[in-house]
Image 1 (cartoon, rainbow, N blue to C red):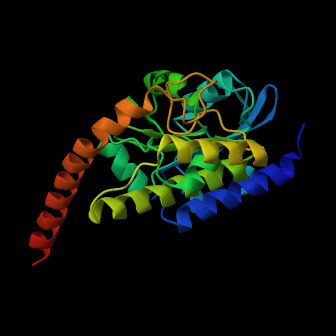
Image 2 (tube, helix red, strand yellow):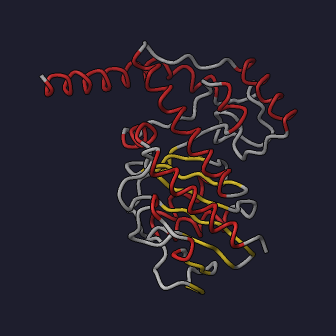
Length: 266
C-alpha cells in the first residue's frame, strides 16, 4: 500500500490548485487515488476542492462501498471506478471543468488532431466522449471505450477527465489539456491551426519512444491499431481532408459568438 497520509495531502493540494487556477468553481470537480487493489480515496460530494481537509476524504472499495469516512463520495465516483476497471495501470483520476477545454467539449470539438509537438509527445490524442448524464451509470459507460486509449478526454457538454500514475500526474495532464485548448482557440482566431504532417508526427512519435513516454493513444489516432506510428496512420489523410472545412465552420461559429458578446457589451 502507498503512503496514505501523503496521498491525502497530495489530493488536497491538487484540489487547491484546481480551484486557484479556475479549473473548477464552487463544489465542482472530483479527485480519486487508488491506494491498493481494493481501496480508493476520493473527494467528498458537496465540498469546494479549494478548501478540503485530509480527514474529509472518503475511502471506498472498487464497488463504491464506503469503507471509511463520514461524508459521501463524489456523485461521479462511478466514472472513476469505470476508469480503474478499464485501466489497471491508472492510479489516479481527476475531473474538472477548465474554461477553454470545456468550451471545446460543449461545442463538441475534440482535440484529437496532431497540432502541438508537446502534446503529441506527452498526451497523444485528446478525444471526446459522447454526452451522458452526469452522476449516473450512463456517464461511466460513455467513457469506457474512450479512456482505454487515452489518458485525457473531453466529456461532451460537461468537462474534462484525466488519469495517471499518481494524483500529480493526472493533475498535470489536466493543466496540459487546458493549455492546449487555449492555444488551439487562439490559433482558430488567427485563421486556423496547421495539422502536422505524417512525417512530422512520426518523428515526434520516435522522440516519445526515446523518452519512454507511456500514453495509451497513438498521436491523433484514437481508432488506429497499436502498430500505427503517425506516418502509417490510415485515418490521417481522411482527417486532414476534412480539416480545412471543419476549421472554416469552427471559425465562423466562434467569430459569430465573439461578435455577439462584443455587441452585448457595447
